[in-house]
Image 1 (cartoon, rainbow, N blue to C red):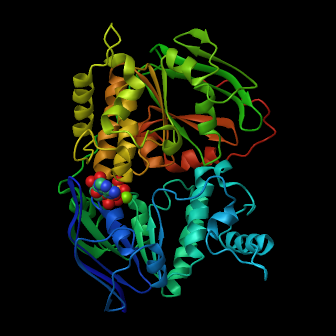
Image 2: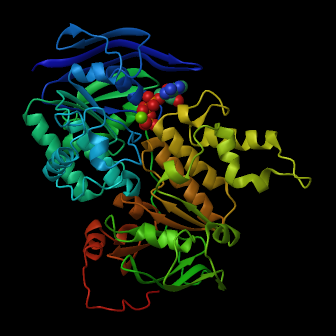
Length: 508
Ligand SMILES: Nc1ncnc2c1ncn2[C@@H]1O[C@H](COP(=O)(O)OP(=O)(O)OP(=O)(O)O)[C@@H](O)[C@H]1O
Ligand SMILES: [Mg+2]
């Protein structure tokens, strides 16, 4: 097989962090090469070196056997290297088409941008990806999933020979992932070499040919993706075995209700949603993307207005019309869109941790107790194994997954009675996932109630005492957690498009 990229002995340091030391990667034409490792292992950094965004301190890069040192993304593109970034790099005020062709817009003979041609080209690209999207839509108005698809289209439009995908599916639903995998297979058949970064172990088996594992910026090894057991790959990543304890499902019928929701309605997105959440319970929300799970969460949290519906907290009816009201009622919401709502990325780790918890760290005289903030932050950093040179590092300088851990961590520190976690483990490595599960279990052991929205079914099944399934804005059923429920049971309800059942009725 033709080797298209070879990176040998690559070092890269940042102030206080040795992000890469003796990192290595070898990519053949027409292969999908998974790059795996814990959050902060150096995957994105290695790929930014390859795509000319960072300059390496030492080492060698061979492209088609020739030593190269791409400086800047344009030079990398000229060498045939394209990258889909982990953090979306789109301009929120521009249209989808403008984002794709930025800096290389088709022009009319007198120099003006040919908008019609640009939109046509974008439309062709989208239809090749089965993406139902008007090229003129302003990107900021789109869901993260759609934005992610635009980012992918943009990378594809360069016709690169080497395509780096840094967690491309983090925000995609199953159908979108299937479309992406079809595209990947086509690219492979055309001889494109793909570096694929993901924390989802099932994708590794579905799409990858080989895997290279990194740990602490170092090369650990390269193995065959299909033949190597997942456990072995995880052990290479974390340097130890990760254990999952089985769920113990408590009897919840006689436990007090923490939250009750009756007849929530908003347009077509939320239709007659009613349920009860008990103290000490994890209620999983399952459903396909667009089923209305996030909409229900946002409505309970007062982030979006309702047409109708009642919310009871601890048996008392509450009028929640803003997140502020919700927090006062003891409800915390970890949003799935962390970039927009979750982090102040130019502030440091400690400030981000303290922000939603200021009252806990303020003395009666209104003075912030910084040493307490530092202690709590350090504890969170240790528990979730957040890779940062110090708690005073700016959050934007951390790896994507470590940023996620901070958002999750700061909510776990909060003193809420009811937690709503929307995709809490997105982009988070296996070791820290297990730790987050444990922290959620700690919360429920202390009588807290948790709603857990996740598109990873095994995760919902492992953590939930009961699983509420939604389809097209309606609750289609509530299943018991634990061994008794299968993925098929959930999928049956998640695809139950029964519209003549006007009123799904009250489900306990
Ligand atoms: N610009 C930067 N300045 C300072 N430190 C950085 C910078 N970029 C990355 N780092 C650090 O380098 C290390 C490797 O980060 P990198 O983003 O490559 O990790 P990753 O393997 O992609 O992790 P994730 O799975 O979380 O995306 C981390 O400790 C990170 O904090
Ligand atoms: Mg990364």
